[in-house]
Image (cartoon, rainbow, N blue to C red; front, side, top):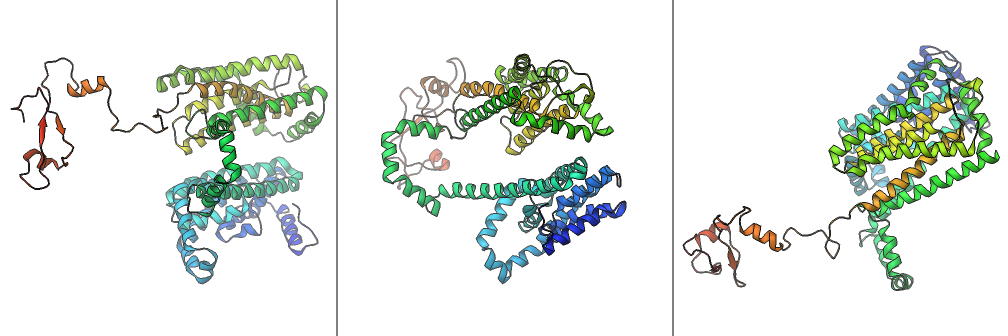
Length: 541
Protein backbone atom coordinates (compact mmCIF):
# COMPACT_ATOMS: atom_id res chain seq x y z
CA UNK A 1 0.00 0.00 0.00
CA UNK A 2 2.98 2.26 -0.24
CA UNK A 3 3.39 2.60 3.55
CA UNK A 4 6.87 2.97 4.92
CA UNK A 5 7.62 0.55 7.68
CA UNK A 6 10.17 2.99 9.07
CA UNK A 7 7.43 5.51 9.67
CA UNK A 8 5.56 5.00 12.99
CA UNK A 9 2.20 5.58 11.29
CA UNK A 10 3.02 3.20 8.46
CA UNK A 11 4.23 0.53 10.85
CA UNK A 12 1.11 0.83 12.98
CA UNK A 13 -1.22 0.47 9.98
CA UNK A 14 0.81 -2.46 8.62
CA UNK A 15 0.61 -4.23 11.98
CA UNK A 16 -3.14 -3.61 12.11
CA UNK A 17 -3.58 -5.08 8.62
CA UNK A 18 -1.55 -8.17 9.50
CA UNK A 19 -3.66 -8.59 12.63
CA UNK A 20 -6.89 -8.35 10.61
CA UNK A 21 -5.63 -11.03 8.19
CA UNK A 22 -5.10 -13.37 11.14
CA UNK A 23 -8.74 -13.08 12.24
CA UNK A 24 -11.66 -15.28 11.27
CA UNK A 25 -15.35 -15.66 11.99
CA UNK A 26 -17.50 -12.98 13.56
CA UNK A 27 -14.58 -10.85 14.72
CA UNK A 28 -13.35 -10.42 11.14
CA UNK A 29 -16.88 -9.53 9.99
CA UNK A 30 -17.14 -6.99 12.81
CA UNK A 31 -13.98 -5.26 11.55
CA UNK A 32 -15.33 -5.27 7.97
CA UNK A 33 -18.54 -3.66 9.25
CA UNK A 34 -17.01 -1.18 11.70
CA UNK A 35 -14.34 0.45 9.56
CA UNK A 36 -16.71 1.66 6.78
CA UNK A 37 -19.30 2.59 9.42
CA UNK A 38 -16.82 4.82 11.27
CA UNK A 39 -15.28 6.28 8.13
CA UNK A 40 -17.69 9.22 7.79
CA UNK A 41 -19.36 9.20 11.21
CA UNK A 42 -16.12 9.86 13.16
CA UNK A 43 -13.89 10.67 10.11
CA UNK A 44 -11.86 7.48 10.48
CA UNK A 45 -11.42 7.51 6.71
CA UNK A 46 -8.70 10.12 6.96
CA UNK A 47 -6.61 7.63 8.97
CA UNK A 48 -7.65 4.18 7.73
CA UNK A 49 -9.50 4.07 4.37
CA UNK A 50 -12.61 1.95 4.33
CA UNK A 51 -11.75 0.23 1.06
CA UNK A 52 -8.75 -1.38 2.77
CA UNK A 53 -11.01 -3.15 5.26
CA UNK A 54 -13.33 -4.36 2.51
CA UNK A 55 -10.45 -5.64 0.39
CA UNK A 56 -9.04 -7.47 3.42
CA UNK A 57 -12.48 -8.99 4.01
CA UNK A 58 -12.48 -10.25 0.43
CA UNK A 59 -9.01 -11.73 0.99
CA UNK A 60 -10.24 -13.57 4.10
CA UNK A 61 -13.16 -14.89 2.05
CA UNK A 62 -10.75 -16.17 -0.61
CA UNK A 63 -8.82 -17.98 2.16
CA UNK A 64 -12.07 -19.63 3.29
CA UNK A 65 -12.06 -18.10 6.77
CA UNK A 66 -15.37 -16.25 6.29
CA UNK A 67 -18.21 -16.46 3.81
CA UNK A 68 -18.07 -14.12 0.81
CA UNK A 69 -21.74 -13.27 1.15
CA UNK A 70 -21.26 -12.44 4.84
CA UNK A 71 -18.40 -10.08 3.95
CA UNK A 72 -20.55 -8.38 1.30
CA UNK A 73 -23.45 -7.92 3.73
CA UNK A 74 -21.19 -6.64 6.53
CA UNK A 75 -19.25 -4.21 4.33
CA UNK A 76 -22.25 -2.80 2.45
CA UNK A 77 -24.40 -2.41 5.56
CA UNK A 78 -21.52 -0.74 7.41
CA UNK A 79 -21.03 1.75 4.57
CA UNK A 80 -24.75 2.62 4.39
CA UNK A 81 -25.24 2.90 8.15
CA UNK A 82 -22.02 4.88 8.63
CA UNK A 83 -22.98 7.47 6.03
CA UNK A 84 -26.46 7.76 7.54
CA UNK A 85 -24.89 8.45 10.94
CA UNK A 86 -22.58 11.03 9.35
CA UNK A 87 -25.60 12.66 7.74
CA UNK A 88 -27.40 12.88 11.10
CA UNK A 89 -24.28 14.28 12.79
CA UNK A 90 -24.01 16.98 10.16
CA UNK A 91 -27.71 17.76 10.40
CA UNK A 92 -27.73 18.09 14.19
CA UNK A 93 -24.32 19.59 14.98
CA UNK A 94 -22.89 20.82 11.68
CA UNK A 95 -24.37 24.31 11.81
CA UNK A 96 -23.15 24.82 15.35
CA UNK A 97 -19.62 24.01 14.28
CA UNK A 98 -19.87 26.31 11.27
CA UNK A 99 -21.37 29.09 13.39
CA UNK A 100 -18.48 28.98 15.85
CA UNK A 101 -15.56 31.40 15.51
CA UNK A 102 -13.17 28.85 13.93
CA UNK A 103 -15.92 27.74 11.56
CA UNK A 104 -16.66 31.29 10.41
CA UNK A 105 -12.98 31.90 9.77
CA UNK A 106 -12.60 28.76 7.70
CA UNK A 107 -15.83 28.95 5.68
CA UNK A 108 -17.70 32.14 4.81
CA UNK A 109 -21.52 32.16 5.18
CA UNK A 110 -21.98 32.90 1.47
CA UNK A 111 -20.12 29.74 0.51
CA UNK A 112 -22.22 27.71 2.93
CA UNK A 113 -25.40 29.01 1.28
CA UNK A 114 -24.09 28.15 -2.19
CA UNK A 115 -23.08 24.67 -1.00
CA UNK A 116 -26.53 24.15 0.50
CA UNK A 117 -28.18 25.26 -2.73
CA UNK A 118 -25.98 22.93 -4.81
CA UNK A 119 -26.59 19.91 -2.57
CA UNK A 120 -30.31 20.68 -2.54
CA UNK A 121 -30.39 20.62 -6.35
CA UNK A 122 -27.74 18.05 -7.29
CA UNK A 123 -26.62 16.53 -4.03
CA UNK A 124 -27.72 13.01 -4.94
CA UNK A 125 -24.98 12.65 -7.51
CA UNK A 126 -22.41 14.01 -5.04
CA UNK A 127 -23.48 11.40 -2.47
CA UNK A 128 -23.15 8.58 -5.01
CA UNK A 129 -19.88 9.54 -6.70
CA UNK A 130 -18.30 10.82 -3.49
CA UNK A 131 -18.39 7.25 -2.23
CA UNK A 132 -15.48 6.29 -4.50
CA UNK A 133 -12.90 8.73 -3.07
CA UNK A 134 -11.64 8.56 0.50
CA UNK A 135 -11.67 12.33 1.19
CA UNK A 136 -15.17 12.92 -0.20
CA UNK A 137 -16.46 9.71 1.35
CA UNK A 138 -15.69 11.08 4.81
CA UNK A 139 -17.07 14.59 4.17
CA UNK A 140 -20.06 14.39 1.83
CA UNK A 141 -22.55 12.75 4.26
CA UNK A 142 -21.95 15.41 6.90
CA UNK A 143 -22.16 18.21 4.34
CA UNK A 144 -25.43 16.77 3.05
CA UNK A 145 -26.79 16.91 6.60
CA UNK A 146 -25.57 20.49 7.07
CA UNK A 147 -27.26 21.47 3.79
CA UNK A 148 -30.54 19.97 5.07
CA UNK A 149 -30.80 17.60 2.13
CA UNK A 150 -33.99 15.59 2.64
CA UNK A 151 -33.17 12.14 3.94
CA UNK A 152 -35.53 10.57 1.41
CA UNK A 153 -33.22 12.01 -1.28
CA UNK A 154 -30.01 11.11 0.55
CA UNK A 155 -30.92 7.51 1.35
CA UNK A 156 -31.39 6.05 -2.20
CA UNK A 157 -28.07 7.48 -3.43
CA UNK A 158 -26.39 6.37 -0.22
CA UNK A 159 -27.68 2.83 -0.66
CA UNK A 160 -26.75 2.71 -4.36
CA UNK A 161 -23.27 4.10 -3.76
CA UNK A 162 -22.60 1.91 -0.75
CA UNK A 163 -23.75 -1.26 -2.50
CA UNK A 164 -21.75 -0.55 -5.66
CA UNK A 165 -18.58 0.51 -3.87
CA UNK A 166 -18.74 -2.27 -1.28
CA UNK A 167 -19.31 -4.99 -3.87
CA UNK A 168 -16.43 -3.80 -6.06
CA UNK A 169 -13.94 -3.59 -3.19
CA UNK A 170 -14.84 -6.95 -1.66
CA UNK A 171 -14.67 -8.72 -5.02
CA UNK A 172 -11.32 -7.10 -5.75
CA UNK A 173 -9.91 -8.54 -2.54
CA UNK A 174 -11.55 -11.90 -3.21
CA UNK A 175 -10.08 -12.16 -6.71
CA UNK A 176 -6.68 -10.76 -5.71
CA UNK A 177 -6.09 -13.20 -2.88
CA UNK A 178 -2.43 -13.12 -1.94
CA UNK A 179 -1.87 -10.13 -4.27
CA UNK A 180 -4.11 -7.92 -2.13
CA UNK A 181 -1.34 -5.39 -1.37
CA UNK A 182 -0.99 -4.49 -5.04
CA UNK A 183 -4.76 -4.25 -5.49
CA UNK A 184 -5.15 -2.10 -2.37
CA UNK A 185 -2.42 0.22 -3.64
CA UNK A 186 -4.15 0.51 -7.02
CA UNK A 187 -7.50 1.21 -5.33
CA UNK A 188 -5.95 3.99 -3.25
CA UNK A 189 -4.27 5.51 -6.29
CA UNK A 190 -7.48 5.38 -8.29
CA UNK A 191 -9.34 7.01 -5.42
CA UNK A 192 -6.78 9.83 -5.28
CA UNK A 193 -6.98 10.26 -9.05
CA UNK A 194 -10.78 10.45 -8.89
CA UNK A 195 -10.53 13.02 -6.12
CA UNK A 196 -8.21 15.16 -8.24
CA UNK A 197 -10.57 14.84 -11.21
CA UNK A 198 -13.55 15.87 -9.06
CA UNK A 199 -11.69 18.89 -7.70
CA UNK A 200 -10.60 19.95 -11.18
CA UNK A 201 -14.12 19.50 -12.50
CA UNK A 202 -15.52 21.66 -9.70
CA UNK A 203 -12.92 24.36 -10.32
CA UNK A 204 -13.49 24.38 -14.09
CA UNK A 205 -17.26 24.37 -13.61
CA UNK A 206 -17.03 27.30 -11.20
CA UNK A 207 -14.88 29.24 -13.66
CA UNK A 208 -17.24 28.57 -16.53
CA UNK A 209 -20.28 29.63 -14.50
CA UNK A 210 -18.62 32.77 -13.19
CA UNK A 211 -17.39 33.66 -16.69
CA UNK A 212 -21.01 34.33 -17.66
CA UNK A 213 -21.23 37.07 -15.03
CA UNK A 214 -19.43 40.19 -16.29
CA UNK A 215 -19.15 41.50 -12.71
CA UNK A 216 -17.14 38.51 -11.46
CA UNK A 217 -13.37 38.26 -11.63
CA UNK A 218 -13.51 35.53 -14.27
CA UNK A 219 -16.05 37.50 -16.27
CA UNK A 220 -13.83 40.59 -16.22
CA UNK A 221 -10.86 38.56 -17.40
CA UNK A 222 -12.90 37.06 -20.24
CA UNK A 223 -14.10 40.52 -21.26
CA UNK A 224 -10.56 41.87 -21.14
CA UNK A 225 -9.32 38.95 -23.24
CA UNK A 226 -12.11 39.42 -25.79
CA UNK A 227 -11.16 43.09 -26.18
CA UNK A 228 -7.46 42.45 -26.55
CA UNK A 229 -5.68 43.20 -29.80
CA UNK A 230 -5.06 39.54 -30.58
CA UNK A 231 -8.71 38.57 -30.05
CA UNK A 232 -9.91 41.53 -32.12
CA UNK A 233 -7.52 40.67 -34.95
CA UNK A 234 -8.60 37.02 -34.90
CA UNK A 235 -12.27 38.00 -35.02
CA UNK A 236 -11.64 40.25 -38.02
CA UNK A 237 -9.32 37.84 -39.79
CA UNK A 238 -11.13 34.53 -39.20
CA UNK A 239 -14.81 35.30 -38.48
CA UNK A 240 -16.19 32.25 -40.28
CA UNK A 241 -13.69 29.86 -38.70
CA UNK A 242 -14.33 31.17 -35.18
CA UNK A 243 -18.08 30.96 -35.71
CA UNK A 244 -17.70 27.37 -36.89
CA UNK A 245 -15.56 26.51 -33.85
CA UNK A 246 -18.07 28.09 -31.47
CA UNK A 247 -20.88 26.14 -33.13
CA UNK A 248 -19.06 22.87 -32.40
CA UNK A 249 -19.51 23.46 -28.66
CA UNK A 250 -23.10 24.74 -28.76
CA UNK A 251 -25.36 22.72 -26.49
CA UNK A 252 -28.88 21.84 -27.52
CA UNK A 253 -27.92 21.65 -31.19
CA UNK A 254 -27.47 18.10 -32.57
CA UNK A 255 -24.72 19.43 -34.84
CA UNK A 256 -22.95 21.16 -31.97
CA UNK A 257 -21.41 19.64 -28.86
CA UNK A 258 -23.03 16.21 -29.35
CA UNK A 259 -21.54 15.92 -32.85
CA UNK A 260 -18.13 17.01 -31.54
CA UNK A 261 -18.17 14.29 -28.87
CA UNK A 262 -19.21 11.68 -31.44
CA UNK A 263 -16.33 12.62 -33.75
CA UNK A 264 -13.81 12.51 -30.88
CA UNK A 265 -15.05 9.10 -29.73
CA UNK A 266 -14.83 7.84 -33.31
CA UNK A 267 -11.21 9.00 -33.59
CA UNK A 268 -10.25 7.45 -30.23
CA UNK A 269 -11.91 4.10 -31.00
CA UNK A 270 -10.42 3.96 -34.52
CA UNK A 271 -6.95 4.68 -33.15
CA UNK A 272 -7.40 2.05 -30.41
CA UNK A 273 -8.56 -0.60 -32.86
CA UNK A 274 -5.65 0.11 -35.19
CA UNK A 275 -3.12 0.00 -32.35
CA UNK A 276 -4.51 -3.26 -30.96
CA UNK A 277 -4.54 -4.86 -34.40
CA UNK A 278 -0.91 -3.88 -34.98
CA UNK A 279 0.05 -5.30 -31.56
CA UNK A 280 -1.71 -8.59 -32.25
CA UNK A 281 -0.25 -9.02 -35.73
CA UNK A 282 3.29 -8.33 -34.50
CA UNK A 283 2.84 -9.81 -30.99
CA UNK A 284 4.15 -6.72 -29.23
CA UNK A 285 2.99 -4.26 -26.57
CA UNK A 286 -0.46 -5.16 -25.22
CA UNK A 287 -0.52 -8.57 -26.93
CA UNK A 288 2.27 -9.73 -24.62
CA UNK A 289 0.05 -9.10 -21.60
CA UNK A 290 -2.67 -11.47 -22.83
CA UNK A 291 -1.22 -14.70 -21.33
CA UNK A 292 -0.85 -13.07 -17.90
CA UNK A 293 -4.43 -11.81 -17.90
CA UNK A 294 -5.73 -15.21 -18.96
CA UNK A 295 -3.73 -16.91 -16.21
CA UNK A 296 -5.20 -14.50 -13.65
CA UNK A 297 -8.80 -15.33 -14.60
CA UNK A 298 -8.13 -19.06 -14.79
CA UNK A 299 -6.52 -19.11 -11.33
CA UNK A 300 -9.47 -17.28 -9.71
CA UNK A 301 -12.31 -19.42 -10.99
CA UNK A 302 -15.01 -20.53 -8.57
CA UNK A 303 -18.21 -22.47 -9.04
CA UNK A 304 -20.59 -19.53 -8.56
CA UNK A 305 -18.52 -17.20 -10.77
CA UNK A 306 -18.52 -19.83 -13.51
CA UNK A 307 -22.32 -20.03 -13.34
CA UNK A 308 -22.64 -16.24 -13.48
CA UNK A 309 -20.21 -15.95 -16.40
CA UNK A 310 -22.02 -18.61 -18.43
CA UNK A 311 -25.31 -16.75 -17.97
CA UNK A 312 -24.00 -13.21 -18.48
CA UNK A 313 -22.14 -14.05 -21.70
CA UNK A 314 -25.49 -14.65 -23.45
CA UNK A 315 -26.16 -10.89 -23.22
CA UNK A 316 -23.65 -10.53 -26.07
CA UNK A 317 -25.02 -13.34 -28.21
CA UNK A 318 -27.10 -12.72 -31.32
CA UNK A 319 -29.66 -15.28 -30.11
CA UNK A 320 -30.55 -12.85 -27.29
CA UNK A 321 -29.77 -9.51 -28.91
CA UNK A 322 -31.76 -9.87 -32.14
CA UNK A 323 -35.13 -10.39 -30.40
CA UNK A 324 -34.25 -7.53 -28.04
CA UNK A 325 -33.40 -5.02 -30.78
CA UNK A 326 -36.40 -6.02 -32.92
CA UNK A 327 -38.89 -5.64 -30.06
CA UNK A 328 -37.19 -2.44 -28.90
CA UNK A 329 -37.26 -1.05 -32.44
CA UNK A 330 -41.01 -1.63 -32.67
CA UNK A 331 -41.48 0.05 -29.28
CA UNK A 332 -39.31 3.02 -30.35
CA UNK A 333 -41.31 3.40 -33.55
CA UNK A 334 -44.56 3.46 -31.61
CA UNK A 335 -43.11 5.95 -29.11
CA UNK A 336 -41.26 8.38 -31.39
CA UNK A 337 -42.88 7.75 -34.79
CA UNK A 338 -39.48 7.93 -36.49
CA UNK A 339 -37.97 5.06 -38.41
CA UNK A 340 -34.29 5.99 -37.97
CA UNK A 341 -34.13 5.79 -34.12
CA UNK A 342 -36.10 2.54 -34.32
CA UNK A 343 -33.69 1.02 -36.85
CA UNK A 344 -30.36 2.18 -35.39
CA UNK A 345 -30.04 -0.58 -32.72
CA UNK A 346 -30.58 -3.26 -35.37
CA UNK A 347 -28.19 -1.55 -37.79
CA UNK A 348 -25.59 -1.35 -35.02
CA UNK A 349 -25.92 -5.05 -34.20
CA UNK A 350 -25.80 -6.09 -37.86
CA UNK A 351 -22.72 -3.95 -38.51
CA UNK A 352 -20.88 -5.25 -35.44
CA UNK A 353 -21.55 -8.82 -36.56
CA UNK A 354 -20.38 -8.19 -40.14
CA UNK A 355 -17.27 -6.20 -39.23
CA UNK A 356 -16.28 -8.76 -36.58
CA UNK A 357 -16.52 -11.62 -39.07
CA UNK A 358 -14.43 -9.66 -41.58
CA UNK A 359 -11.76 -8.76 -39.00
CA UNK A 360 -11.61 -12.36 -37.74
CA UNK A 361 -11.00 -13.62 -41.27
CA UNK A 362 -8.29 -11.07 -42.00
CA UNK A 363 -6.37 -11.36 -38.72
CA UNK A 364 -6.91 -15.13 -38.23
CA UNK A 365 -5.80 -15.22 -34.60
CA UNK A 366 -6.20 -18.54 -32.71
CA UNK A 367 -8.20 -18.65 -29.50
CA UNK A 368 -6.63 -19.35 -26.08
CA UNK A 369 -5.64 -22.96 -25.34
CA UNK A 370 -8.64 -25.30 -25.38
CA UNK A 371 -7.58 -26.78 -22.04
CA UNK A 372 -8.65 -23.52 -20.36
CA UNK A 373 -12.03 -23.25 -22.09
CA UNK A 374 -15.24 -23.31 -20.09
CA UNK A 375 -17.45 -24.06 -23.06
CA UNK A 376 -17.33 -24.80 -26.75
CA UNK A 377 -16.09 -22.02 -29.04
CA UNK A 378 -15.62 -21.86 -32.79
CA UNK A 379 -13.85 -19.60 -35.25
CA UNK A 380 -11.03 -17.15 -34.87
CA UNK A 381 -10.46 -15.10 -31.75
CA UNK A 382 -9.76 -11.49 -32.80
CA UNK A 383 -11.85 -9.40 -32.22
CA UNK A 384 -14.45 -10.57 -29.70
CA UNK A 385 -17.79 -10.66 -31.47
CA UNK A 386 -19.70 -10.92 -28.20
CA UNK A 387 -17.98 -7.81 -26.79
CA UNK A 388 -18.63 -5.82 -29.97
CA UNK A 389 -22.28 -6.86 -30.20
CA UNK A 390 -22.93 -6.18 -26.52
CA UNK A 391 -21.55 -2.65 -26.60
CA UNK A 392 -23.03 -1.85 -30.01
CA UNK A 393 -26.54 -3.13 -29.36
CA UNK A 394 -27.02 -2.14 -25.71
CA UNK A 395 -25.19 1.17 -26.15
CA UNK A 396 -27.18 2.23 -29.22
CA UNK A 397 -30.42 1.14 -27.60
CA UNK A 398 -29.55 3.22 -24.55
CA UNK A 399 -28.82 6.28 -26.70
CA UNK A 400 -32.18 6.01 -28.45
CA UNK A 401 -34.16 5.41 -25.25
CA UNK A 402 -32.59 8.23 -23.22
CA UNK A 403 -33.63 10.96 -25.69
CA UNK A 404 -35.74 13.62 -24.00
CA UNK A 405 -35.23 12.27 -20.49
CA UNK A 406 -33.73 13.90 -17.41
CA UNK A 407 -30.01 13.88 -16.67
CA UNK A 408 -30.49 11.32 -13.92
CA UNK A 409 -32.44 8.98 -16.21
CA UNK A 410 -29.88 9.35 -19.02
CA UNK A 411 -27.04 8.61 -16.62
CA UNK A 412 -28.72 5.49 -15.28
CA UNK A 413 -29.60 4.21 -18.76
CA UNK A 414 -26.10 4.66 -20.20
CA UNK A 415 -24.46 3.31 -17.05
CA UNK A 416 -26.58 0.18 -17.34
CA UNK A 417 -25.71 -0.25 -21.01
CA UNK A 418 -21.97 0.21 -20.42
CA UNK A 419 -21.96 -2.12 -17.40
CA UNK A 420 -23.71 -4.77 -19.48
CA UNK A 421 -21.02 -4.54 -22.16
CA UNK A 422 -18.32 -4.62 -19.46
CA UNK A 423 -19.57 -7.79 -17.78
CA UNK A 424 -20.01 -9.50 -21.14
CA UNK A 425 -16.37 -8.75 -22.01
CA UNK A 426 -15.17 -9.97 -18.60
CA UNK A 427 -17.20 -13.15 -19.01
CA UNK A 428 -15.40 -13.90 -22.29
CA UNK A 429 -12.07 -13.56 -20.49
CA UNK A 430 -13.24 -15.69 -17.58
CA UNK A 431 -14.48 -18.45 -19.91
CA UNK A 432 -11.17 -18.29 -21.84
CA UNK A 433 -13.06 -17.69 -25.07
CA UNK A 434 -10.89 -14.67 -25.95
CA UNK A 435 -7.68 -12.91 -25.11
CA UNK A 436 -7.76 -9.50 -23.44
CA UNK A 437 -6.88 -7.66 -26.65
CA UNK A 438 -9.74 -9.47 -28.42
CA UNK A 439 -12.25 -7.98 -25.99
CA UNK A 440 -10.71 -4.51 -26.12
CA UNK A 441 -10.73 -4.61 -29.92
CA UNK A 442 -14.38 -5.69 -29.92
CA UNK A 443 -15.32 -2.68 -27.82
CA UNK A 444 -13.25 -0.38 -30.06
CA UNK A 445 -14.87 -1.80 -33.19
CA UNK A 446 -18.32 -1.26 -31.74
CA UNK A 447 -17.37 2.34 -30.92
CA UNK A 448 -16.20 3.00 -34.48
CA UNK A 449 -19.30 1.56 -36.12
CA UNK A 450 -21.63 3.16 -33.60
CA UNK A 451 -20.14 6.60 -34.20
CA UNK A 452 -20.41 6.07 -37.97
CA UNK A 453 -24.14 5.58 -37.42
CA UNK A 454 -24.60 8.36 -34.85
CA UNK A 455 -22.77 11.09 -36.80
CA UNK A 456 -25.14 11.02 -39.84
CA UNK A 457 -28.07 10.71 -37.44
CA UNK A 458 -27.03 13.92 -35.66
CA UNK A 459 -26.37 15.72 -38.94
CA UNK A 460 -29.82 14.74 -40.22
CA UNK A 461 -31.58 16.17 -37.15
CA UNK A 462 -33.48 19.40 -37.68
CA UNK A 463 -32.21 22.50 -35.96
CA UNK A 464 -34.47 24.24 -33.43
CA UNK A 465 -36.93 26.63 -35.10
CA UNK A 466 -35.44 30.12 -34.84
CA UNK A 467 -35.88 33.47 -36.46
CA UNK A 468 -33.20 35.32 -38.34
CA UNK A 469 -31.52 36.46 -35.13
CA UNK A 470 -31.31 32.96 -33.73
CA UNK A 471 -34.20 33.47 -31.27
CA UNK A 472 -37.27 31.39 -30.80
CA UNK A 473 -40.36 32.94 -32.44
CA UNK A 474 -42.32 35.09 -30.04
CA UNK A 475 -45.84 34.18 -29.05
CA UNK A 476 -47.15 37.48 -30.43
CA UNK A 477 -45.46 37.09 -33.82
CA UNK A 478 -47.64 38.14 -36.78
CA UNK A 479 -49.83 35.45 -38.23
CA UNK A 480 -49.76 34.50 -41.85
CA UNK A 481 -52.79 35.09 -44.08
CA UNK A 482 -54.21 31.59 -43.62
CA UNK A 483 -54.00 31.82 -39.84
CA UNK A 484 -55.57 35.30 -39.91
CA UNK A 485 -58.50 33.95 -41.92
CA UNK A 486 -58.84 31.04 -39.54
CA UNK A 487 -58.70 33.37 -36.54
CA UNK A 488 -61.23 35.74 -38.11
CA UNK A 489 -63.61 32.89 -38.89
CA UNK A 490 -63.48 31.70 -35.29
CA UNK A 491 -61.66 28.52 -36.21
CA UNK A 492 -64.69 27.03 -38.03
CA UNK A 493 -65.11 26.01 -41.64
CA UNK A 494 -67.69 27.59 -43.91
CA UNK A 495 -68.97 31.12 -44.22
CA UNK A 496 -72.23 30.75 -42.35
CA UNK A 497 -70.69 31.45 -38.99
CA UNK A 498 -71.25 34.85 -37.41
CA UNK A 499 -68.22 37.14 -37.63
CA UNK A 500 -66.97 38.19 -34.21
CA UNK A 501 -66.46 41.89 -33.50
CA UNK A 502 -62.94 43.15 -34.10
CA UNK A 503 -61.86 46.47 -32.59
CA UNK A 504 -59.11 48.61 -34.01
CA UNK A 505 -57.32 50.55 -31.31
CA UNK A 506 -56.27 54.01 -32.43
CA UNK A 507 -52.74 55.25 -31.62
CA UNK A 508 -53.83 57.67 -28.89
CA UNK A 509 -55.92 55.10 -27.07
CA UNK A 510 -55.00 53.62 -23.73
CA UNK A 511 -55.70 50.04 -22.77
CA UNK A 512 -58.17 49.71 -19.92
CA UNK A 513 -59.35 46.76 -17.85
CA UNK A 514 -62.08 44.58 -19.26
CA UNK A 515 -64.73 46.05 -17.00
CA UNK A 516 -64.00 49.60 -18.16
CA UNK A 517 -63.63 48.52 -21.79
CA UNK A 518 -67.01 46.82 -21.81
CA UNK A 519 -68.94 49.50 -19.97
CA UNK A 520 -66.97 52.50 -21.16
CA UNK A 521 -65.66 55.37 -19.07
CA UNK A 522 -67.11 58.79 -19.59
CA UNK A 523 -64.48 61.49 -19.65
CA UNK A 524 -61.10 61.52 -18.02
CA UNK A 525 -57.76 60.29 -19.33
CA UNK A 526 -59.01 56.72 -19.49
CA UNK A 527 -61.64 57.50 -22.08
CA UNK A 528 -61.30 55.28 -25.13
CA UNK A 529 -62.68 55.56 -28.65
CA UNK A 530 -63.62 52.52 -30.69
CA UNK A 531 -63.71 52.54 -34.43
CA UNK A 532 -65.76 49.75 -35.90
CA UNK A 533 -64.20 47.75 -38.65
CA UNK A 534 -65.98 48.46 -41.95
CA UNK A 535 -68.60 45.88 -42.83
CA UNK A 536 -69.41 45.07 -39.23
CA UNK A 537 -72.99 45.22 -37.98
CA UNK A 538 -73.17 48.42 -35.92
CA UNK A 539 -75.91 46.98 -33.73
CA UNK A 540 -73.57 44.31 -32.53
CA UNK A 541 -72.14 44.70 -29.07
